[in-house]
Amino acid sequence: MISLSDIPTKSGFPLTPAMCVFLVAVASAPFWLEAVGLYSYLGIEVAIWILYAMGFNLLFGYAGLHSFGHGAYIGIGAYAFGLFQQNVAVSLWGGLLAAILAATLAGALVATFVAHRRGIYFALMTIAFGQVFWFCAIKLRWLTGGEDGLLGIPRPDMVLGPLRVSLQDNFSLYWFAAGVLGLAVLGMSRLVNAPFGRVLQAIRQNEMRARFAGYDVWRMKWLVFTLSAAIAGLAGGIFAMAQESAYPDIMSLHQSGTIVMMVLVGGGLVSFWGPVLGVLIYFVARDVIGGVTETWLLWFGLMFVVMVMLRPEGAAGLAHVIRSRLARPKAAAPAERSA
Amino acid sequence: MPLFEARNIQKRFGSRVVLENVSLAVEEGSVHGIMGPNGAGKTTCFHVLTGHHAPDGGTISFDGKDITGLKPHRIARLGISRSFQIMNLFDDTVAVENVILALPEFRVRALNLSRRVFEDRQLIDAALEVLAQVDLADHAWEKASALSYGQRRALEIAVALAARPRIVFLDEPTSGLGAEATRGLASLVKRLRQRYTIVMIEHDMRFLFALADRISVIHWGQVIAESTPDALMANKWVARSALGELA
Image (cartoon, rainbow over all chains, first blue to last red; front, side):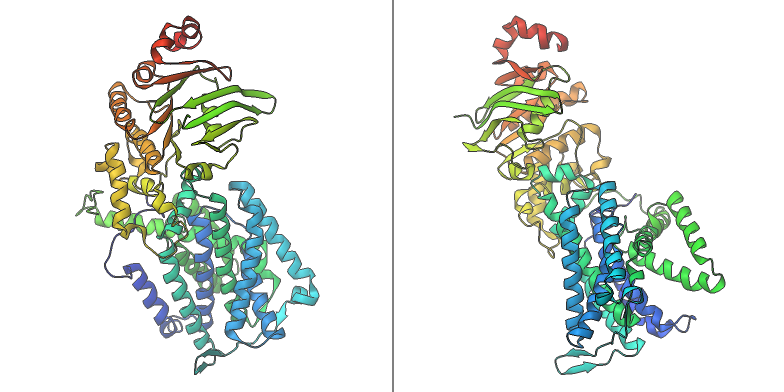
């Protein structure tokens, strides 16, 4: 049985093979997406959701804190990005910064109330707070535009020193989203094996032991909640650009459940890459099964049920089982390491 | 002055008084045993002394400093370390990481976001050294959940020692161990006593009497006797109330 906390194998090269596969897939996506019958906007959507899901998994998988109200923070990011464009200045970096800041603040506020909880109480409180934000998005018409949301959010040009790149077409926005995702993945892959990440995992495994080892568990939980909200906010900012709007639906309980489902189906509980698989499976199901039948969610739901029953570690766990079956004949691998 | 001192500790859960009046003084460098029948309040006493529960009355001091009511992580950082009666390990990860997580030099970097833990030779060496103290060096890279019962007991102690504590609280270290493993543990405690002050709850009388300098007998939430093992043997009242049941 694998776990998120297995010791990473050493490699002299800073990129792991999984990371290389991921980077190549991300970098080449625009060249084959349409060839396989998909469309380039899908690439942006997938990149945003992977970013969101991986940030969410820091909280859900690594720290073992089961938040069911995480849609709030991607939504807050999207609204903050839109409000910044409409009220302050049309600026990409300013908007994204506003998105991150707003989601960080909201996350920090909620974390202050939920960080001393765990299990069902934590889950219920995150749902409650998620609903509060969703309700605010609908009711504060003067700020959020109510149920219609903010419309006509621009896609500002990307300005990098003397360089100015338009993000108007989906192709260039995809590159931008993929670039942000790539940087975030590099950062997160370091984080989870740095002291911060390992302590989070220790807290997941045994909160009491972590406390008696001298860790301020409350503070660590507060930090990871806030960090994961910040990443959701960043994803939300890009989402607002992709959709050219921000609306309450993204913050609904239903969407908060979707991200949990993605992470579980993909295997976020056992693998860093689980959320990536989960997001891909979800969007393939939506666009491929959805192309055949309107009831695609039914089939996706059934798949989820089967997955949880047969292979609760998700797609990443399944991949691991297949790999180790294939590898078994030649290596009755001793657990020894020459570290 | 004792290194660790608890005075008139009281603890209630609702209307149930678990600790009525417990006082304990532990001299630096000694092994202090705590014994008593099941339900006497021994583990609760440990929970209060190490900060898991705040006492309802009384004071606790360590090294001349009042630590009453401090949170567990604050108490741990002062150099007070403990093991648990019911095994409390980081089960998803290897033995060596269980120890690394408890090293003070690792703890102060808990907020570091970029340095890979398992590329830090020094940390790993420090952890391997602690594992060697409890004879687990050969199992350093096995998952905690895959270790045998006795090895998990030893790892419990290693995690407590990794904090480089000045005082170690061991909650029934022999619990569930066979005769041979218990002998091994006794020789381990003999080695450890040269470096640490130890407070230990123990049911195994032979084990405790051979190792402890002083023993407190707890019954009905009170210390009913406190003395050297030899003197306790001679105390008839104690023999009837606690030793008699257990010996």
